[in-house]
Length: 92
Image 1: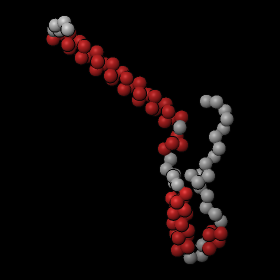
Image 2 (image 1 turned 180 degrees about the vertical axis):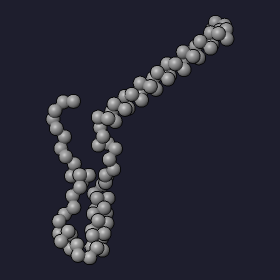
Image 3 (image 1 turned 90 degrees about the vertical axis):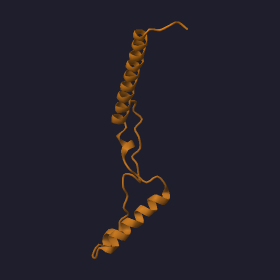
Image 4 (image 1 turned 120 degrees about the vertical axis):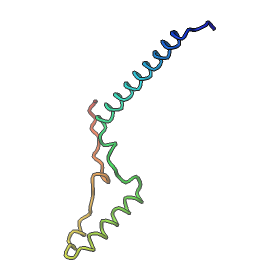
């Protein structure tokens, strides 16, 4: 290994730091573009059938606690999280 001066070490260190920051910036831009394209990834929705059933039972309990709202219990409560819209076949 050749002997490196302090100036050579400083230049090499600055080069590594610059390349690392440029790489992090590129990853950040890529993450931003993916996040803008896939907004539905950031919505909170039940993951399993059990959690969906628990959410529905909580909604039913809240509705039954309110007097005079018996007609709303006959309608099934379906949200977007439980019935996701089908994706289109169009290319992006």
